[in-house]
Length: 509
Image (cartoon, rainbow, N blue to C red):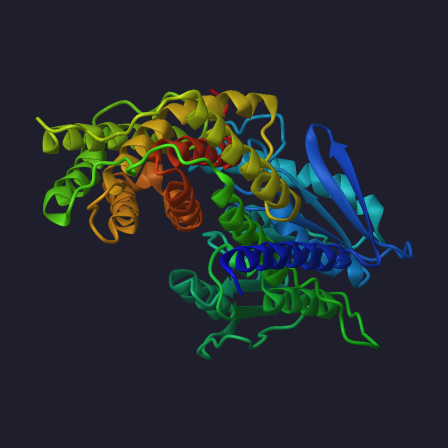
């Protein structure tokens, strides 16, 4: 088989993967009626059994930097099995037009505002079902739903996913299930500690129910296998545990196996198909620089350009002002990209002093700009649309569009310097992944230096690392085709600015 035939076969395989995954994702909506609504200013979605049966209502709340799309698997599973599920976007998140006000760490600040918002959604949702109510929350929202349930006597069951909440007691909230990913070590210990409040003097064990549902004292810790803080939301084990808990709390006896919305593998297949398609479409980009452009640094010269920015950036930002955007920790991340990129560029200029920079002719030519815009357009179609549809809110509201542009200043500085540093004839082997590892380590240093303010970056860093893997592959294919680092730098800078600008919570002032 010739090379052309191989590439055609791979493109066909990509289309098959995309088509199959789309069909399976749509099939998860079988027997479910889905309608969008607005509760005051709160965007919400109602998932009902298609037969119109009025079962108990489950209010489902997403975590930090998430949106209601993240919680679709739970909502679909509940609705397919007789419950009414309601998802919504918290203040400052997703498509909620109002920013999040108050201190994010103070109980009378943002926490109270989010509890009040949950109460508003619950008040609206009660009339959608048979009057009975349960709540589910992930991560940040696990604490919110626990606090709401403790102050709301008619909440029959609480499901806390990846829970951290200091207010849980042996009896409150009623009938508490804690679901944790098996790779969430600290939260697993916390889940067992909470269950231990009710199991004493017996040592608490996972997958064991303590207490009783009739008394409202039921407690259980469940560990979903082979998942972490985000993928726990797509685990079929998580869905089964949550549905089983609701059935036990509401005394539902099933006559047939439950229908579980197992969307996780199909979302992965969809993204894999889009990625494979990108590898083939990249071959169509024009050759822009020959020989290939870039710094072309061997390890003995490259390491200072990796080490100095990684250490110096968090130290500098410890004293420099980084509160310049109304977005939680996103302004710091934009500043980190900017300073890191500038320091990398200065290091490269010093390392290449007296030598031609080999940035390459055509680095800012119309052809380069067109190529970068073509790649960005592919990102919009192949990544923004499926992520927004099946994973999390990824389309900017008008307020967030301005944030994307502000973030772009920082990401442009970083990606232009990084692409130049790690590309070119004679470049160090594995320079590209090493530079990304250095950036992640730099963020870890920043969190260690200012844990109180940057705590939520701990949650985001794994997502940034995943983005580095995906867009690193795109970068390699683009550079192989064009020979010009600027193309991938421009497109990936926009992708990261977009991701930060549309997902990080908006703050009031």
